[in-house]
Image (cartoon, rainbow, N blue to C red; front, side):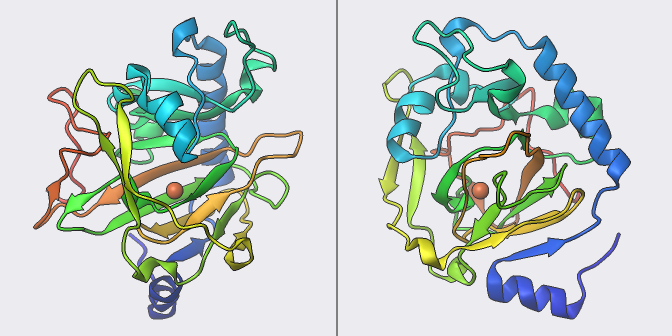
Length: 268
Ligand code: FE2
């Protein structure tokens, strides 16, 4: 397995993120995109489960937290949608392949193409706006362990189609908020402890990357995506590695391992 060079490691430690181009080949990206296309063509989402995905705090509480569709998706393949893609009856207003924000959260367990690339909680992001956040807000361990996001561009991620933006060096000031599960059966299903600071937009640096690039994301670095304003998609495959040694996975996290699908260990 390739290792980071000392200068790459230093850059990651300074910035809280690092781009590694050429992580996947064009063929590997194409195979994953083809599989996404097949899944979207075959998707059958009940009307009441047409959940729109957003990390806007209010939206999240309403659209995700209030629905079991999201909270029980940790060991399943489910579809989450962009805003405004359904009419009030849940019918598609846009072609279904252009409606999806992400597919999650257990492709690694159930789909052979994605299984062959990785093996831990993950989802393809199909492009779209994601408001400023730290990944550790959603993947919390006690004490706070390291979380590493792996974000792989399956096609070129550009300024116009929703590439990642980072605040370099923002990974050193702790976790500003945590999303926690509410007691079973209560609504909404999740809430936040603390709040995301209002970040100065001028602090964010865009990070366009070519197809096949891997972006390493420190669990506490503040990052976002702008809306995809292009005509095309911006497929990415993302998953997270969490430090298990010496930590306890918070029972308050929305994502919980199940007996059928425990978190796979990277090292055994
Ligand atoms: Fe993220």
